Amino acid sequence: MRIGIVGLPNAGKSSLFNALTRAGAGAASYPFTTVEPNVAVVPVPDDRLDAVAETVAATPVVPETIAFHDIAGLVRGASRGEGLGNRFLANIRETDAIVHVVRAHGDEQVPHPEGRVDPVADVETVETELLLADLEQAERRLERVARQAKSGEAATVAEEAWLRELVVALGEGCPARAVPPPARAPEALRALSPLTAKPVLYVANVGEEGPAEPPPELAARASGAGAGSLAVSARLEAELAELDAAEAATMRAELDAGESGLARLVRAAFELLELISFFTAGQAREARAHAIERGTTAWGAAGKVHSDMQRGFVRAEVVGWDELVAAGGYAGARERATLRLEGRDYEVRDGDVITVRFTP
Ligand SMILES: Nc1nc2c(ncn2[C@@H]2O[C@H](COP(=O)(O)OP(=O)(O)O)[C@@H](O)[C@H]2O)c(=O)[nH]1
Ligand SMILES: [Mg+2]
Image (cartoon, rainbow, N blue to C red; front, side):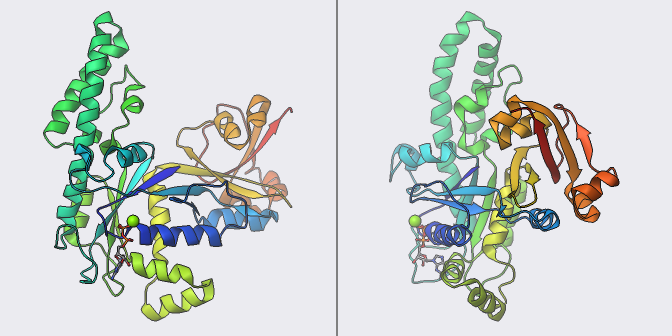
C-alpha cells in the first residue's frame, strides 16, 4: 500500500515525512525491507490485533504497514514540465492514494511560493496541475486506442468511448473519478492510472498552537470532493518524533495536543484505501494483520499469507477477533462454536482471525 505525499513547496511535506520515518523506525522491532530515502514505512495501529495477540499469547505483533512517499517537485506549471515536472508525476501515478499537505499556518519565517497563505487556493493550484497532467495522458492514450478501436474489438471500443468522455470532463475541470471506467474494459482505468481518480486526504498543516480542525473552507471542499481532511502540525509532529515515547507523551499533554497527529494521519490514510483487515495468530508465533480488499475470499486471503497456503488450501478456521477474545482463545472459541470451518469461497470479514489448513 503506497501513499504519495504531495503539496506545494514549503507546505510541510518533508516535516511530516520525517516524523513518519521516525515513527516507523521507532516501531521497527520487526524487519522492514530496505526502502528508498523518500519512502517511510509506517505501522498501522490496530487495537484488535493487540487484543488477539494477548489472548492467544502470540509474539511478536506485526501490524500492517503503509509506505508513504515524499513526492517533491510539484509547483505551478509542473504539468508543463516546470520544476521536476513529469518525473514527480510518474511517482504519484504509482501510488494508491494521495495525502495532500496544505499550508494553513501563518508563520512568516516560512516563505510561501505564492506569497500568501490561502489553503483552498493552494489546493486548486495543485489539483489543476494533476488535472492537466491527466488530460495530457488521456489525450495521448486516446490517440493510440482510437487507432486500435478500428478493429471493432468490444473492450477497445468501450475504452475509446470512455477516454473521449474523460478528455471532455478533464477539459472542463472535472477530476477523473467523476467519470466511471467502462465495465466492458476493466483494464482501462489501470492502464491510464489517472492522478485525479485516486482517493485524497487533505492534511491542513496548522501552527503548533493551531486549531485541531482544518480550516472550514478546506473541510467543505474536501467533503464536496469525497475526500477526507484533518489538521496536523507538521513541525510539532517532527519535533515530538525526536523525543522518546514518554517525553513525547508528557509534551503532548502539556501542549494539550491530544492523540498523536501521526496516529490520526496513518489511520485516516488507511481508511482512504477502503481496505479491511484479517489477522493470523498462533501461540508463541507471530500475530499479524493483513490488509485486503472487501470481497476477498478465504482462498485469496490464504494467498496473502503465503503462496503455499493458497496452493494447498484445504479449509479455513475462522473466528471473529472479538469472539476469540471473549472465548479466551481458540479452544474456548471451538467449544462455543464461534470458531467455524469455511471453504475457499468464504468472503472474509473485517476483523476475522483465520487459520488456514493446507497440504504442504
Ligand atoms: N511554524 C511552522 N513551520 C512549519 C510547520 N511545518 C513546516 N514548517 C516549516 O516550513 C518549512 C518547510 O517545511 P518542509 O516540511 O520542508 O516543506 P516541504 O517543502 O513541503 O517539504 C520548514 O522550515 C519547516 O520547519 C508548522 O507546522 N509550523
Ligand atoms: Mg520537501
